[in-house]
Image 1: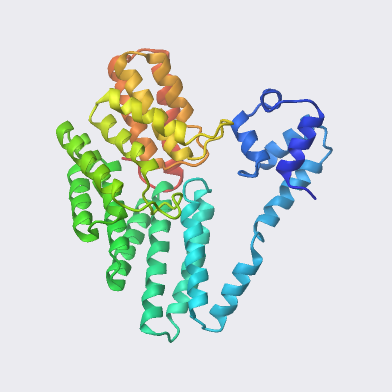
Image 2 (image 1 turned 90 degrees about the horizontal axis):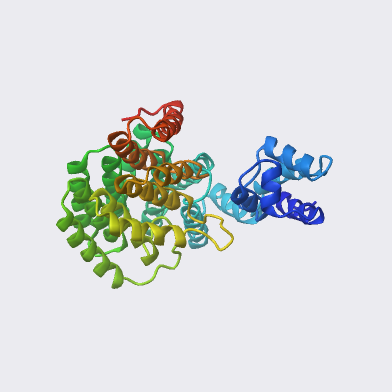
Length: 400
């Protein structure tokens, strides 16, 4: 049977409906429908039923949706079966390690768009297999490479846990990742563990701690890719502390280092820094420093780079934070309607980092209440932010 997305497109076109027309009839978000057709998202049972009904599919699309879920678990069976066969044989050969490393890289490339809970579960599964290999008799080189694999998996899982609001789990995982990096002598993993510490502290309004972590990480990592992101965290910390001159110096230093690093093989890998990410870092730092002209310019670049020509968001987390940046600058500029509309749009992102989103949304909320305390639009934004906060509370993580 064809995939849900392919069959949905065929039926929609057979009915002479555009995506916009279908979205209006359902109702649903046009961008989300586009992602369904392209296979980048899976429909909920309710949405599959509604689309089936509107397109007169008589249950076919509902069946497609269920089959897609099952098929997704078997997308690359030969890779998994081969790796697990080697694991069962305690065969930590170069081929096994190469397959494991490729799998981890693929997972890190999925960080920006994949469902966070699914990614965490799969990462934990591969971490268990890595630990299983580590318990077998292996040579020193293989042992170090397995430690490195475990370190990257721990970093990824820690990031996802923090996105989900699981603060205590994320910190424990981050600490373990740093220890693995130190044991393996891998400066990159150690540097990223410090970068996560800076990120955690910054989103918890512990600016001095964030600055200390960013600088400690730079000392540990040297002139490597992660150092660029550590400098970006330093710039954001300085922005929060109101040091605009320090922000500019840090960003200039980071940009200079980035320009002298080789282009990454996989720019979509969360743990590789490429020039396309620099606008995102600069946007955050300048928004925090209230340099709104530069913050708006970089936010526009982030949204353009993170959105496909058909309007589908390729980098939903970055785009959402850029939208909130524009909401903050609009509020400070006196444009209440644009601030609230843009801010509410950001809350609809399919994939999001709750701590980061709450931090920036809190900035917008504060500006709205300071400038427009009695306006209905301010109350509307506050209500939407309350719902977002309840999401974090529901996950068992406290909200600061």
